[in-house]
View (cartoon, rainbow, N blue to C red):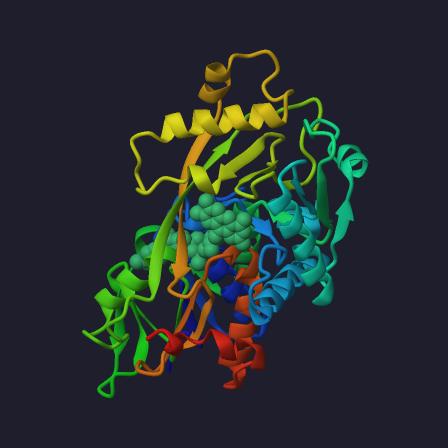
Length: 397
Ligand SMILES: Cc1cc2nc3c(=O)[nH]c(=O)nc-3n(C[C@H](O)[C@H](O)[C@H](O)COP(=O)(O)OP(=O)(O)OC[C@H]3O[C@@H](n4cnc5c(N)ncnc54)[C@H](O)[C@@H]3O)c2cc1C
C-alpha cells in the first residue's frame, strides 16, 4: 500500500496550489519543500527560497495577447482566484483585486497604438478592459505624475497577490484536510523511487522514503536541473526545455499615511512597473533593469536607479529624504523566473517516465492555483482536461 495517492515536490505557489486541489479532491497528499517552515502563520515551507517569494505577483491575462489559448488559460487563472477568495476569504488569501493601469505618454505614438490594439484584442476575447483619458488616469492615481495627454487602459479584473500569505494559507488548508506538509531537511527530495519497469513509486527525502503512484514536481526554476539529476540520461530528451531568467525587485518601506499607488501600474514603455505592497510600501521592478546574473554585484546600484525612476513618477515617495536614505530602508530581491523554451506553461505527465507529472511555468502566480486544480482533476480522474492539450511536456522533449 502506498503512503500517499500523490506526492507534490516544491511548495511555491504552484506546488501549494496543486497540493491544495488534491487534498480538496480527497486524495491523500504529501507536500514536500526543502525550505524551512515560514510564512505569516508559520505553516508553509519555502522560507526565503523559491521564485514565488520574489515575484512581482501581478495576476493577469492582460499582457498575454499573442496566443488565444495561453491568454484564456491566464484569464481562467485570474478567475480562479476569485473562486478561491470566495471559499477561503480574500484577506486571508492575500488577494488584492486592485486592477491594473497602463498608459502611453503623449508623443509616444508607437506605444499609444500598441495600447489601443491591446484593448481591441482583449475586448475581442471578452477580457474586461476599458480605455482611460488623462482625467480618468489622474482620478484613479492622484499621486502619480502623469503628463498632460497621457492615454491608457484599466484592466479592472487584474489583481496582485501577497504570495507568502497565499502559500501559507494553502499549506494550512492541505493540513486541515488531512494532508501532510513537510518542510526543511526532511522535505528535501534527493531522488525518485522507481520500480523494475521504470515507473515512479515515490521519492527519497531527508533520508527516508515516501511512496505514491504519482509524483508531481513543482520545482520552479530548478525543475530541469533536478529532474535531469534524478532521471537517467536522455529520459527527458536532450533539448533544454527551461531557461532561468533573473529579475530584480525593490520593496520600499511604508509610504503612509497616503496610499501613493493604488493599482498595479505599467508605465510608458511597459517595462517599468510598480504596485502597492502588503505593509504599505511599493514593490518596484523593470524588465530593462533586470540583471543577467542571479547574484549580480551591482544590485544596489540597479535598485537605486529603479528608486530614482519611481520617485520621478511618484514624487511623494520617501518624502524629503535623500534617495540614498530611502534606498537603505528598502529590500532588494532577485527572483529567478522559470521560462519554458517556448514561453508557455508545461503541465502534464511525462510519457517516458510513468508516474511523473510536471508543472512549471512563467506567470506562475497568475496560473499556479488554477493549474493545480486542473492537475488534480487529471490525476484523480485519469483524464486530461481539454484545455491542457497545448501545454504538455512532450511538445518540448
Ligand atoms: C522578478 C519576477 C517577477 C515576476 N512577476 C510575475 C507576475 O507579475 N505575475 C506572475 O504571474 N508571475 C510572475 N513571475 C513568475 C512567478 O513568480 C513564477 O512563475 C512562480 O513563482 C513559480 O512558482 P513555482 O511554485 O513553480 O516555483 P518556486 O516558487 O520557485 O517553488 C519551487 C519550490 O521548490 C523547492 N525545492 C527546490 N528544490 C527542492 C528539493 N530538492 N526538494 C524539495 N523542494 C525543493 C524550493 O524550496 C521552492 O520553494 C515573476 C517572477 C520573477 C522572478
